[in-house]
Length: 500
Image 1: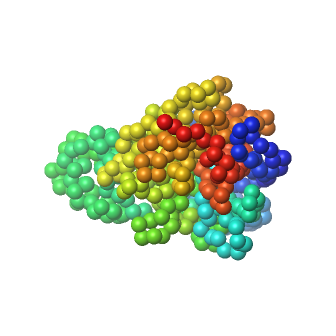
Image 2 (image 1 turned 120 degrees about the vertical axis):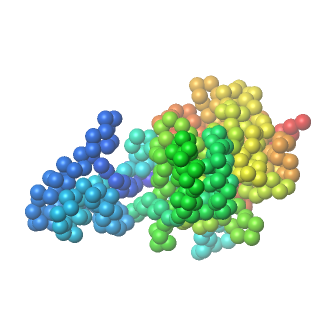
Image 3 (image 1 turned 45 degrees about the vertical axis):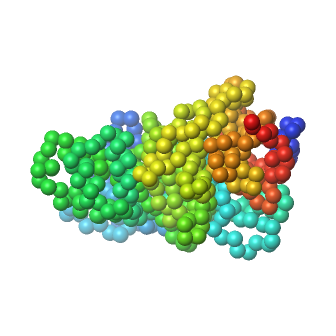
């Protein structure tokens, strides 16, 4: 899981320290997914019925023997293996002839045949973000436990979100905590949907007719899936008879289904939790989650994150919200600024404004504000490509970090040969549209080891944090491994040049 590198300083003038610690992809980290023979090919030909017919030809002794073999091979690798087999059997039980009575072992064996392991990070492990962990028990003074989100890439370049934890301090010490044990994918739970997000989604698709307006008027500000279907079930007959009704209902359901919730048992530790694609819009990946700790209006601490949903053709912005990193609410990001990768939320409102960094034009780092309709407005440019090492594009590396000197923003730039480097700038605390200082040179660049990998010549982070006078930065190296760097904040600020 880990390897060591000798810590070394970045090029002259840079205050960053690389730590003697890296995380490598671990092929042993697997989850169980539904497997339907024939549906994984380009020409879909479902073979479920013929497979079940062959299983039903086995006698009970053979069924028991095969099930025992499966349990011996796989039980220690997963939480509740039999429960998963039972769930997968339930998903295909309609293929079993109605007049056939199955034994419990036969049900479990059918479930096993419709299951497979997926190595979530077999291809790559990269693009982490770091926030304070909800559990700070058992630590000595000067130490901070942090939760680190991970972009895990497996077969088919499918990305999911995973976690690990580490302890920072005292000083420049860092220690990764245990990352072993079976993994679990979050279980879907009842979600609360927001009417303003439904309205924003309809506006983006330019759907505005009497049926959609009637549904919006009938829904409460926050509604469940049952309340939504109840409203649809009581629509006037005159509206249901209109020629656009079928398309409008499909759009309403599609937008509502975009938002969902998942939860994990309290007994499953953070490093064993996996956020797996749960809607068609993110079927090819949940990419580059940027977590940030926020303080709610009632004073309680929670976490928010933005990530990119990818379906193999199109991308879409999504937001995660959680109080405990155990129960997650997922909602779509709406508005002009949410139509590209890289959105990162400010940890608190600024002068009553809800703000985010974004790169909505694909190459310029900008600042967006969320309006009263939950839409992220067109961005105000903050940083444009203007130096040799960032002429292709610039963007952020996670959420801004509040300091006495201003909002610290770690940036990334792309230069010749698509080489990435990480930089930094400061925004005014009260007026973040104003850049007050920036780092005239790169802060972290790929070294001779980090430049090699799945996507060469890239260092990239989705966010770090400030602890005990140091800024801590986890980063992905060439989309294949994760490294850690820390920076004395006074040295970083001292290296920045004021912007007129």
